Length: 273
Ligand SMILES: [Zn+2]
Image 1 (tube, rainbow, N blue to C red):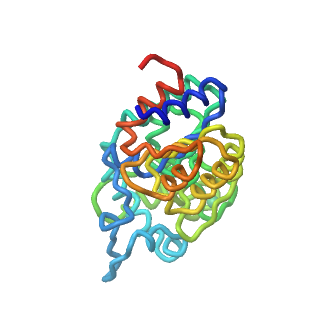
Image 2 (spheres, rainbow, N blue to C red; image 1 turned 90 degrees about the vertical axis):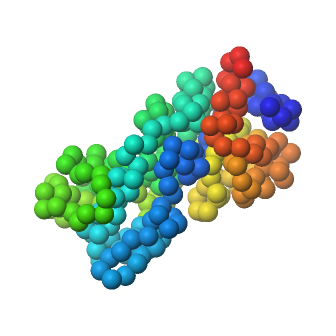
């Protein structure tokens, strides 16, 4: 490990500092989950091709709810064999070592952190394993109903349409995910909690995040302005790497989550290795 990175991590460990990890699509990509933001997310409705940025919107859901659900079931089909990887496991180990000094904030909706064993996770873009009433009639956030089959692009069956009805008001259930034309909030996406954790962090560990969305950048800026330590793990240059390189206590750890996190976590947790 690079000397500067080791000394940043040792300082946080010795001070028993608070750590926030912010993860993005990169850590899931190593489990084989595509971002669905490029060609793999293109979808045909009627005679038109739609980009993911058009499919994952409230506007599209309001016009074509069954199509949006069909797209999500297709996405679940693509991802159904994905399992958590060493990067996810390293963050579970960090939570066990640091207890309530650790907070995990993820942009990923795939639930891999939860399946790996992470417990305190703020899913700032939601969680695809959950649904809520599209009309917010008050059922809260509930599990994805059983009977939905991850698969190819086949239309919804009558039985699937039935289980996607809200048990209270009979309207559509919607995926519990933040869409491109919606805003972060505390109730569904833990925005305030995530920013509060960033405001108290001694180290922000950014993993596999491109910085394409607004809230992760806001978290990065909060930490940068306070002069807290900032470590960016990413195989490629990105806005967090630039921030880390500008920060006196920052480091751009070039590489993937699986390559870099086990060593970083061992150093932070003080375990041998
Ligand atoms: Zn309802």
